[in-house]
Amino acid sequence: MTFTVHPVPGPGAEDVVVAPDGHVYTGTEDGSIFRLSPDGRRVQRVAHTGGRPLGIELFDDGDLLVCDAHRGLLVVHVAGSADGADAPVETLLTRVDGTAMRFCNNAAIASDGTIWFSDSSTRFGIEQWKDDFVQDTRTGRLLRRDPDGTVTVVLDGLAFANGVALAADEGFVAVAETGARTVVRQWLRGPRAGERDLLVGDLPGYPDNIARGSDGLIWVTIASPLDPVVERLQKAPHVVRRLVTRIPERLQPSPQQTIRVQAYDDDGTLVHDIDLHVPGYHMVTGVREHAGRVWMGSLHEPAVAVYDLA
Image (cartoon, rainbow, N blue to C red):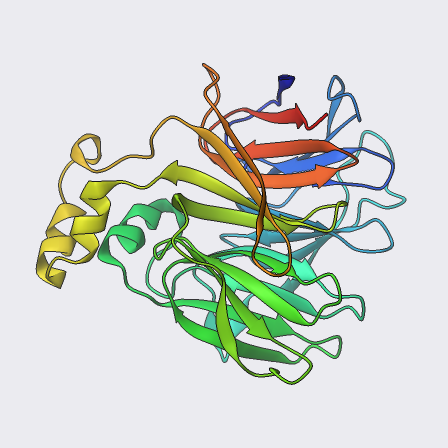
């Protein structure tokens, strides 16, 4: 096993994306966007969003699409920006049907420029993610932004909508439901267009970001294993769930120390299951396979990590 941790100058390197040339981008809790060299040894800040960057995707021209939990959908113009200077940040979308998004989380970009993205909750922001998770509000949404700027709510009522990925042929879009431990599939084309089913159900833990790798598989993070206490709480009366989120945080259920990612093909068949226990790194929330290497990010860690499949 080859598992390497690469520090970045800030906690919460939540997601990762890998450019065709091997450079890796991540965003941290303080709003910074960092670029790591392909070997992970050189780290450079390339932008600052002024919010809390979560999911990161690449446009064909090399610019970044950033899902910022505070500021919505952003474009970070890193392509052609001067070395040593923060790249310009453009606001793409902050409101849906006249209401500000509370928790813009993750996205996938189609070949025609359509952006599929998740809004995890309409009640709670990122600072209260545990409240939404334990209370099981099921107010998460999957949305679509067309190239002309039109925004449509495609799915709602999701149990903490999270990672987003497209089929290899873009015949379906998948979105992780963290609270339900599933990956929901919405068919976009073919005889099943408009139908909703599960790409994967009954995951062994709570999924966060998902992403299509260079191997054509959909990679799924398991941020924490199944927690029997959480499972019971989600079935308890609403008043009980609300009371739990009001007790001191140290007494609330917390993510367990684990490093786990899985990969599925477009039929929902499990192809890889990487389950590691490495001291000093845990709660993998971002994943990206590129050329046989699996890069990972974490909502808490001041670092990204990489695992060599070979």
